[in-house]
Image (cartoon, rainbow, N blue to C red; front, side):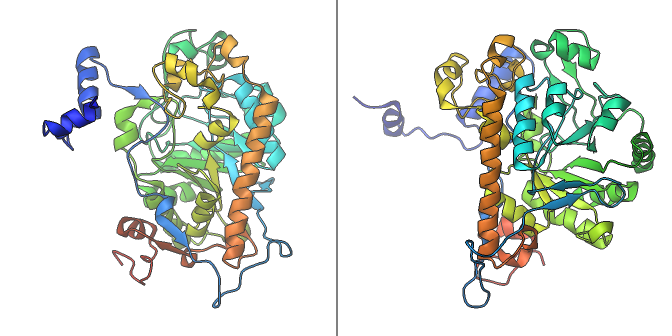
Length: 446
């Protein structure tokens, strides 16, 4: 009995590269419903990424470090430029902002538990600070977003750092969404919203229109917190070089650059796939801006760079650090580590019309794992203690993998990795990362 694929081949049928079946299905869905598609999970299109870079390990011209005898440091200090109390982290991997609302209360607690066990920070996300997350987080970064949902001065003072969010990699220039089925009584109370009604966050802060206003706002935040807390500024990667320079001039202690491989709980698919630039292209632009201002890895006067968007393993961490980041942030990978998209829930993902490893309808609030939901029964499935343990394990593995690579390159600290330790295996990656094509000394465009 022949398969449908065999039948199509026998008939000489050929799928269009422009109008493939996925595109046809999207057109048909739009025609049927009259609304654009909303989903999470980040960009699915292939993009130049860290896999297109390779490290030059040591042999004769440079000696490696012996992992059993020679130390390779991983600690990082964030925010010492202006803050009285900068963050001292044991590892250069942090947890990105993901809101209570997008995630369940137990999931937020687990993020705090796992990050604290590994000696790093987690971030509130939109919608305010929950007691569970604050209580379990040794280092908690409070996000200050355009929506101002849940924002109050008391929580600003309770935080260990403040992150002013100007954009997200999955949707630079666009606001977030939280659909009504996730606006529970508690979420609605924290955000001062009607229960069960769709919430759309603003795409820009309501009280400024440019960098001068950002300077004023950063000074206000410093005064509210008695100059104790580091102030981060987060941008979605697009015009990265100019945005980073403006953020530093406005007074940022730390700049967070989020590439388009960054995930999101819910936004228009057209944003996810067609707005922003890849993480790989954004890092050298950010580093160049910091170098020209004299603040890249400049000790107590320095402005640290955190990179996020598609970080999956220790090699990605090491490559981001080698390109000039001081730390990275993970979001999607952290949720997977907690237990999202786990095969144990395969039958329930199938009931939702998806499968483990493909589920991206986080906005629907029906996540079988209990992580991206506000349904009490589903959220009760998730054990925050076990989730925190899993996340801590994952963070340790990322760190050990990055250390392994750093030692192989002869470096006594993971932040000693540098661009000359890297080569690219595609012309596109070489041009974006500004490193040579493997086997040559050619950097395309230079």
